[in-house]
Every structure is written in C-alpha cells, then in structure tokens.
Length: 541
Image (cartoon, rainbow, N blue to C red; front, top):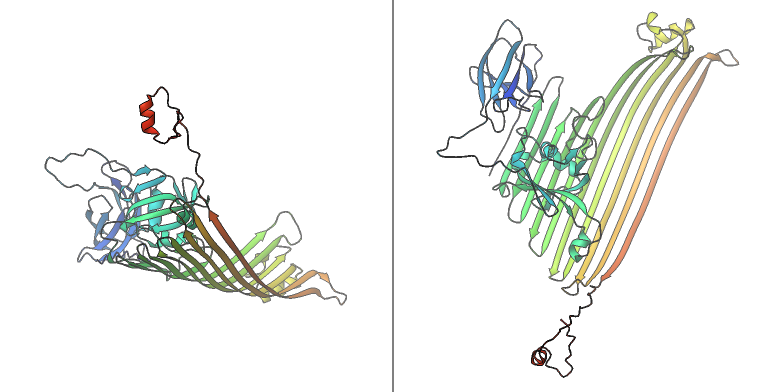
C-alpha cells in the first residue's frame, strides 16, 4: 500500500491580505488548526495556504487582484468552498466562515455513545488516537500533546502522568531506541490507531521474572489495520521568502518479519526534527540549518531471534550576528559602549543503537545491546567592542570603524577598544555495550545470569583565541596608549574506560505449608484420608 501526503506553503512579497475566522458550526467555537487554501479560480491550482490559530483566525496574501477560491478543510468537517475577488490591491476581510461537522445520512441510525478517549487496563493507559484531532500531515508529537496527562516541553522531553518517557515502541517493537525526539517529530499521526503508556520491565527482570525496580515508562503506538504491512510514505514540504525551506519525509516497508523505516529532515528555519538538540521551532538565535537522515530496522523470528537497530546522522550549521549599543547611567567613565559579534558553528554526528536477542533453546536467552556515537564540531567567532565617554553617534556614523575610532580618540572620547577571535574544534567518540546470558534452571524461578557492561569515551577539545585591548585613558612610560595582547591555545583531551561484571543466581523461596485441624470426623473417614499407619487427627493439607 502506498500513501503520500504533501503540504506546500509559499509566501509572496505583495500585500493583499485575505483574512477571516473559521467557526465550528456545531459548537459555535473557533475551529483550531483548520487548513485554509487559496486556489486559482480558473484551474483550482494551489497558490498559498494557512492554518487557523486557537481563535480560529487565519491570514494569507494574494499575489494580485483577481478572482480566487477559498477552500477550508479540517478533520471531521465537510469542506467549505467559497468564491472571492480581490480588487484594487486592497485587503479582503471575509468575516466568519462556518464549517459543519461531516455527516453521513443513514436510515434509522441513532447515536448512542461517544468514542472513549482513554481506558485503563491494570497499569496501562490506552488512548484512542481517533478521539483526538490533529492537523493533516502532523507528526505524533501533536497527538501526544493532546493526550490527557501528557506534556511535551520545549526540549522535546515527554512526561505521562508525571513520569518521563524513555522509549518509543511501534506495535510493541523498539523504535529509534533511546531517541524519543526523532520518533516524535517524524512518525505521522495519521497511521496511529492506539497509544499505550505503561512501565516496561528491564531486560533482566523480563527474562528472569524477578523484579529489580529498573522500569522505564514507554509509549507504544499501535498502527491502524493495513498500515503494518506493505509500503507507505509521508512527505511535508514548505517554501518561503528569504530562501527559507523545510523538508520532512518518511518511508516504511513492513512485512511479517521485517520492518524498515527511513526518515529524512532538512530545513533552515531552526526546526530540529530529531534528537541531540532543542526541539520545536526554537533552534536558537541567528540562521540555523539542520539536516537529518535516520533508519530504523526490526526483525523477529518468533521464539528464536529478535534484532532491533537504528542509525541516525545529524548535521547543523549556525550563523549568528549580533550588534549592540548600550548606555550606562551608573558609571560616568565609559558610559557608552558598542559591540558586534559574528559566530559560525558546524557539527556532524553519527549515532547507532541496537539490540540482539537470541534464544538457542527454550531455557537459554542471550542478549547484546551496543551503542556507538561519534560527534565532531567546529566554530569560528569574531568580536569587536569599544566604550566611549560620550554618545559616539553624535560624532560618527559607525563607532566601531577604524576611521571613526581614530577620530573619537583624537577628541579624547575613546575609553577602550577590544577585538577578539576564536577558533575551536571538538571530537567525541562514545562506545557502550551490555551483554547478558541467562539460563533458566527450572520453571519455578531458578535462574543463573551472567551480565556485563562496558564503556569507552574519547574526547578532544581544542581552541585558539586572540585578544587585543587598547586603553586610551592609561598611558605607558613612553606616553602611548596602553595595549595588551593575549594569545591562548587550549587542549583538553580525555579518555575513560569503565566496565561491570555481574553474576546472579536466583532461587525461589517456598512458603511453609499451613496445617488444618480436622474435628469430630468418624474414624472410617480419617482412615480414608490417611491410609498410612501413622495417620492422625492433624492432617496436612
């Protein structure tokens, strides 16, 4: 089965704003995150689009005067189509636009109940995904935000009823192990049927049946019927002014034994659609571009072999320029200051996590979990600052230009001037693995377990910085301005090894058998109960 969803957003420079408010015709409340499209009247070609906010408001720009079509769609509502016309380059206010819930006429049909949003089964919360509306083409992050008791903060941290979610599962199988952010921002919500939240036992507790208290809260996303086999894909593309772009795509291929899911993300709007950095639309100051490619693989041969693995590549570029002018009312000397800073950053990282579980026979379980991460980053920054005794803009246009500084210094307005630059490079390699062999010696809980954990970390950070400081109010013995030059080179390498070996033997403890006293029983019944010669009135049950 092949499924593709594309959302295209473009922006135009001319200002012919078309605005309005979308209302739910049933509840009379604003329709949140309804999709509004502007189409050509001649051939219904898409021109631009918008999404309503929490007040039902939307606004978009028409490229020119003329006749157009407004089409409003939302999950659970009938589409609303309206002809409009933009005249004389003026803005167009459409007022209230009412959309009605989708309905199908059935003979002798009665609504007797509402869909349950959530049920509780023992210690598992089960959410019905169809009971929560999400925008068309959205990722499961939007679905999770709507679940009762769920919270997603700006860094992508997920909590369910106060417990942090450590792992994402898809139909019970691990997905991007240890990386909840990539799953949250790349799995489409349209393929999800149920969401389960529960505490999953550790590998040791699951195999031996002995609780060790090391549980992890997980979210298990069940796929809709038909989505767990075959081929399907999802595509989200956005284009805007100032060369802004955003791309998010996913493709999956599922069979009875194999599951392969490929994800890709690229944008320059500060949206990190993956782990390893801030989530959401707050990627930091300046111009930030990010790229990601992730692959998840699951294989299962029941009661024999299970393989789960994920690999992800991240790349990011940052370009931050800042300019600042400050006037201080506390100190008279150097009351005015100007600063400019330019910083470029770049990073690449590879991350691999896997799990192999093998059962060569019914009593033996062998498990191996490797983790590999490699990160490299570099940066280049430059800064210039100066302070003055008076407002420098009264005398020059740019106070930090060399010609302007010479003029201000000749007028005794300069206090100090500093220039600095910095080059940095960092590399980090992290290897970690867990190996576990368990042998079940009996069916009542007797186990022998060998478990080992090890890790290796190699980190190297290098930087070189230069700084020039000129003090115009302090003279040297020769009568010149004081000047300080500073050059620094820093190198901080570090290596770390660690390992743990554990051997565990578990023996079940039996409770003492209770005794029951038999009163006033005929002798023949006692002989029936205790045919042996040593039978007595205190029988053991």
